[in-house]
Image (cartoon, rainbow, N blue to C red; front, side, top):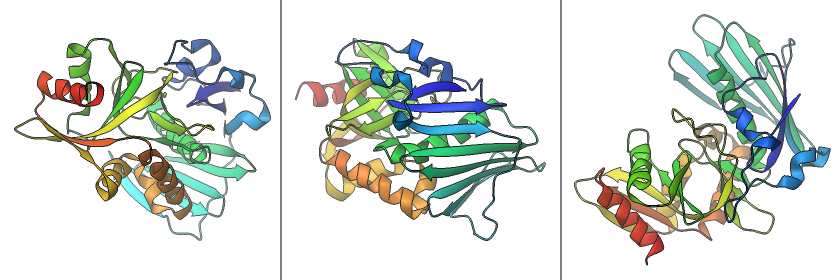
Length: 304
């Protein structure tokens, strides 16, 4: 069994096909980075004591129970693979199915304060499919610890993270590259699925993760959060702060989409988002893909 620390939580993974997932090696105890205010993720968790383990994932050659009597709460299809989420009390089933009949199943169950998941595969699935499945599994478990994935590209500047939000193709990665090229002492934290966590003291921190889209940026570090900036393409560069319903509407779509269709998961997401918005600003940036757009956000956040 291999042990990882993701968003400050201990995850234990074992079983065929799950021992060499891309990006995960950066989240072992030996791959933390220590500095301030960017710091490693809760060194006290290294021992992996039972009360600190949020999730255990096992790949076993035994098919888990399938909720055959229930309709899925969420379905989608991408690149000839269908995705379904089923829910029943404190348990969930995730099913990925290819057109050739291959199935990838995961049963996720809550056991007191932690979660257990069994993964079963028939047919051939890539490491990226297994990694995506683990993202969904971890996402379910992490919600119970006030932690949620935010689909975004994130840069760190002056020890704080700025989350750039938007639909695919709106320029999140382009904008973070503008920061790296034109704003000194900036670095990329994650380019797809960083996590936000509300700590025990009520503070909010951003965490790198093993899921970084097409950009291999796997950093087991965390920082305070400066702001969220939702992007939209425009012929001018213009920024304004959002409040109330507008702020919720800017941030909520960047949370895991499937979770919005299941009552237990959606309520947890809404609770976390509500707490985040009590502390942190959300902006809307209409912009061109140029250095002036990055300078405008920088001036708004750090020179105002």
